[in-house]
Image 1 (cartoon, rainbow, N blue to C red):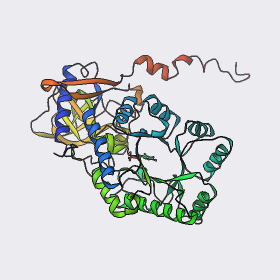
Image 2: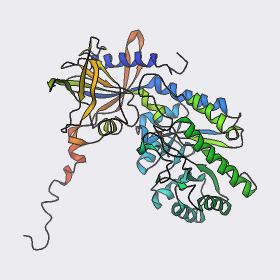
Image 3: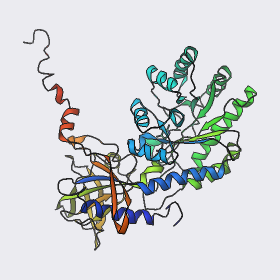
Image 4: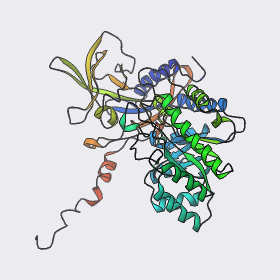
Length: 456
Ligand SMILES: *Cc1c(COP(=O)(O)O)cnc(C)c1O
């Protein structure tokens, strides 16, 4: 095992102990049949590995901001934990900015990147001094107006799409020819427009690209960064001074959902980048990264109680409390987003025994609500638990309110003395009162009092 736990052995042991302790301590049981668990030790290890990986390849003294893509795990205590590990925040909406601020992140540790920023959002970001990457020429116009009317400390840049192509998952491929993000660099006249934009605006000092998430191979990611770097070099050459002083290379490191091993690692990606784009690391440019999934995915586990088991058409089916509400992508697009499932008994101990092909179903009222279909696992019984692994990013923090199913509680854990486990609440389980309130409960009569003229 390496010092960052990339082999995953420590992670699997901690997870098993946390599931057992969650049952023992009553976080999981008949009346609280689903939880999200976050491995605090693992999150700290990944953050440390990220910092070390880029420290290894950059010239001494190079400013590097690792800004966690908040959309991956939008939970205030997680953002605070990452900040404690020296990681900032990449935000893409007023909500995400509010979360980052609630976590105590400073403007200097925050980057705003959304494709649909309103004038008010831009004004607030510039007033706070948060870094902003303009997505398109219309947005740059708005920023021009703000820069003319008030002084701002915000580092400002433009997001480009190097159009290097997509990966294996269309929905997370951001550098296709027709992607909605950034300025499409290979379109006719676009490159010249970008160069001009910098020539005309001495305050534009950054260049940004994020060439995709899960499913993009490393060489393609490196190519996207290489093209962005080449553009920065061209712009600085044309201007005759190093006006672009920072390159934001985005996030997108893929996650291995097939085992506990971390692959690829941050160290591998950083070395691949240094190989492909050595000039990026020679100290002339500061760096911003925006990793999301790769920092959190492997440190989250959804654990759900098996409410009933049955057999249908010869198939064993375990009906659990985890389905589309916590694993939306997996349920709707199972081919692209398969999750590992492990079986635990009613006391939260790993289940052994012969494997049986079975469906692990969720609680929602549609037939496709399956966490896993035809999966070989020790046969789940009523009162057992099924765990969906690697769900720390884009899963249980992304509740989907189908069937008004409650958002589960989320708990962080660390090992304690003598094989024990300590938990801390990250997010309380959603109450029925809150479900009613969020579903218009305060406006119950709103529609019956609304009459068109002459209808009554
Ligand atoms: C989603 C996103 C990220 C993070 O992507 P991951 O695959 O989670 O690392 C980073 N930057 C931008 C602009 C994004 O939209």
